[in-house]
Image (tube, rainbow, N blue to C red):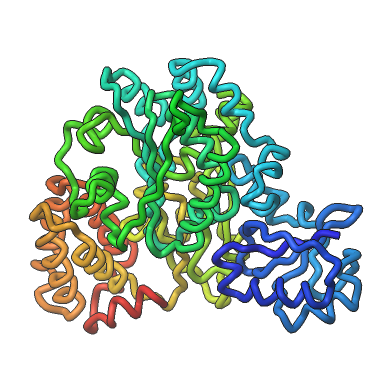
Length: 515
């Protein structure tokens, strides 16, 4: 009999290791498999038992629950207060379209046999047969766009790198997942690391790169450890291919960040990989022409690269059939903040924000009304309830003054002061700016000071004009999106919640953001 207990960081934080140890004692004949999380984080640790009718879910399970669960027939899938029935029949999972996360929570993350049994390596096998240009064409036809936030067409980026005549090229995975309320990259690396590796090997074949780097934020120790083990396993299986001297045909290495949010920006990340201070570089040239060590370099998000094996194995049309308009495929949305059922939801583009927040998220955990949702990270705009009917897609969200970003949705209830949140956006930019350009470095400081004056009732009309001028300057003159996007949450908060900028001095912004 097989029992699945997640090794995902979220589950570990809720006592998954202790639960696994308790099961080993209470059911010594059971085979305990440490899988990734299914993404239903409010139920972690979620224990699954393999039965004749499929895997049956129990959760949230504590170590103290285990003995009673085993006594009451958990190993046979019997009913219990903590039982949710067959996992695949749970509405939260049943109503998703899981392409990128198809294996996460199902397989043993470090079992290559398990990975292959669930469709892994098929994309690579096809890529080895069709050659570089056809690989790139397949990705272009799929409509895959960058899942890190910018949404740039992946195939066009790859085509640019392929066209360069340099013999040395690089492919980098950006796993510096720093946006508030986001955890999809971490879940993927901890739950299905081989999909990222396969996507990178295919990408290397497509653009002609023989070296790859995965840049992972230091706050993800479990993901770092899992990815390193996965690379070793992949290499031992000769899936990187071999040169005549026995070295891997595609050399894949891990680089660990040092906690700088700005290193999520591609040129700053490349500077960090080179061992330099993480600062934004002036463009052009773009990295696809001159990037890492001044060689053609592709930088893609983890989810972008992990989507490639599905596209190659099933064809561009199979992927493009999901979604709407120019937003093709699926997006792993992450629900966080004051939400009853926080977790990961992979849906085709076109799902509404209301469906995500209420049908999947179940409304607020506190029971209070939702005041606003921040979409797209700490520099994304605030969306008021009147716009919750918006379809989630790159263009449809932009039309409403919002952005997709990395798919994170952070929910704030009606006790949140949005003036304080606007101030926090400026403060965040002040702290995290690389300091290279004046609009970002100085503008964020002056923006925070100006919001303080407005909220203290000091010459509000004049200071609102100053704030608007600052936002214009940061938006148009900053070197990168760090300064360029900071005005978005400020302006959206001002437009929709002007009353929150009037009256008393602001509360501590860090405390407000944490709440």
